[in-house]
Length: 111
Image (tube, rainbow, N blue to C red; front, side):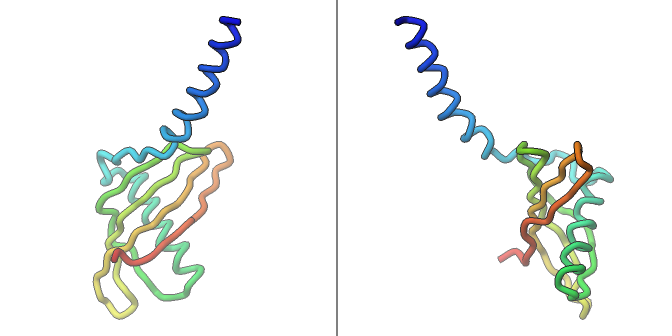
């Protein structure tokens, strides 16, 4: 009976704690790294490929990440519109190193 109780407690703990831990965003300490800047450039290029709006990448100014099946990034990006106006945008993307794939989840102006 005691073993059964321990297993039940462990099962409930993993059920409650693991989803909460998966939702935690970790700040990206150094957004100036080439990989983070390349991710921001990729996000803008992917957005332009989908929307054909002529947006041009400037730089990633801040970001955070979340460990999921791969790495989920939330990036704040400075970019120029086709008319030359500066703007701030946020992008959410997932990078899966195992399969070498990226997927843009959302992209839009910071409100």
